[in-house]
Amino acid sequence: MFNRTAKITLAGLLFACWPTFLFGGETNPRALQDISTVKVYFDVNVGEANKLITRLKLINDTHSQLVSSGVQPELVVGFRGKATRFVTRGDDYVFTEDTTAKQKVHGWVQQFKNSGISMEQCLIAAGFQEVDSKDFLPEINLVDNGYVSMIGYQTKGYAQVPMD
Amino acid sequence: MNIKKPKFRSISFLLFLLTAGTLISILPLTVLGDSSQSQSEAAILLQGRVAKIIPEKNLVAVKPNKGKRVEVMINWNTEFIGFTKLEELKREQKIKIWYLSIKETKTAVKIEKLLTLGC
Image (tube, rainbow over all chains, first blue to last red; front, side):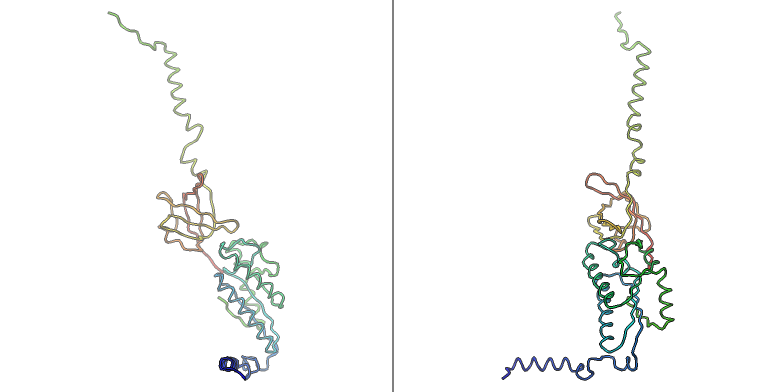
């Protein structure tokens, strides 16, 4: 019936997916045991384009995995540092070779908004990066001081996840 | 004896020549101004981040926050503030650059390395 190649492929697929069969898709069962809601603050400050995109993808993956684990996530993404330049409108503030990456960042920002993830931009960082507050993407809430945000969210019980 | 009389005998004619000569000698300064002052007035200030450095070509490319990047040549007369040689500048470094734009060539008069702060 099956030839040898098909059998090997099937065996490989079963081997690759065995943790999913074993744990029913939940990869952090112990950490999420007896938890129905999680609150997380992601501190995003990396200014290297590809690294920033990877970080944003990881945030999105984390959100998806929390949801698929049956946990209700309340996520906040805080932008500061050199990441600040990538969450502005248009092609300004980044090097010409980073404009494509900037558009991808904009795509993630839109995705986060659609997923109900809050986003904040520190205006102190904006000052250091000489970014006009009017130039930020409208999906992002501007806060006077990103450190105050971190302190506030942590005091409210948000887990702090550095994304540098 | 036949002695030739001087050609310019008239004192008023000599005075005219002296006045004309003086006027001609100061004319360039009056019309064009002092050359060093003219250079500093014409220099364009640009602030931005270093996008690219090509030491072998003595070239630095600067990207302002808004607008296209500008490529500026460095020469022996370019003044460095906060650093000693072009190789010390790295990509992303914030700088101020004063340059002269003559025809298609932009030549740096002065480059200042700025403090990079993050938060």
